[in-house]
Image (tube, rainbow, N blue to C red; front, side, top):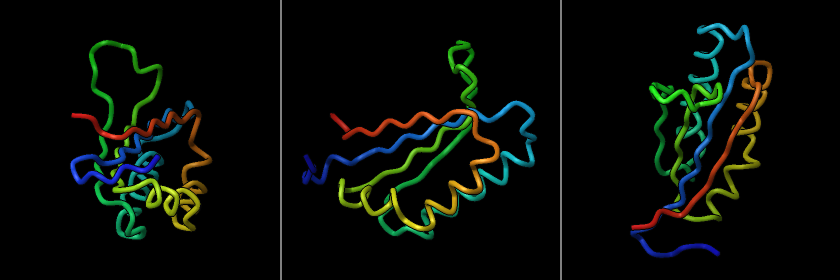
Length: 108
């Protein structure tokens, strides 16, 4: 069900665990490619990312978290099969061990 209230947004959270042996330079290639997506896909309304620094030891090898914001499920539906998103997947593919994706509507 699509949300229409202006105080709620759709968050798309993506976490990557890279294959053993992925170098920092290779991870940067992925970071740079992901960072371009908001300039290529107008439906992305917000973007931020970072690397894990939790002291809890519960990350299960996931190191990178990307956080995208959409205003509607229709916008997300444009993003997912978008050619630039698919091209990013080809950049990521050789280095990816696991991905975790969670989408949610914000709640106050």
